[in-house]
Length: 112
Length: 115
Image (cartoon, helix red, strand yellow):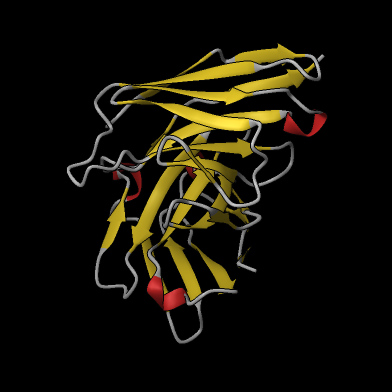
């Protein structure tokens, strides 16, 4: 199975600060169809996961543009440019290139 | 608006069975593959099973193969997860999700396996 390693496990930020989360894959996530199926999800406290970014860098509809994704092959980054209070929760990367689908272990964002 | 509403969870003894349902609305259910993803208490997300749009192919994580069965009724826009021979390690919140990018998730249903 593909292992996704997220760092850091915990992140503490002030409102307005920019932060980044890393997701490294144990194998390339570039699919034979040319797409890279690496997504980012946010799970707010007590809620179900919400898709933020799909295919590395595409912003899901309705998601604020302070969220952005980048990367390729095995190294990916989620950036929040100007953290807001509503951004607290656990961020997960997930890959759907290789079966079975796998998730990173999560990064908990706390607001100072 | 896409809506996914799970039901059927609860407390069950080890070795017993439980069937989860996920009622879908707001999209053409029969066009999409669907999945179950679970989350043990205080833990991360774990894919459980996927079924393609017409139900002709299914996929499972190794730890549930032979015990869980994913199915769907496209006429009722409903996804199911039949869980047999339940174990304590199956205790989790179970989410149904639309497999297209995993952009739509239900609110989750709790399953507790304990004597």
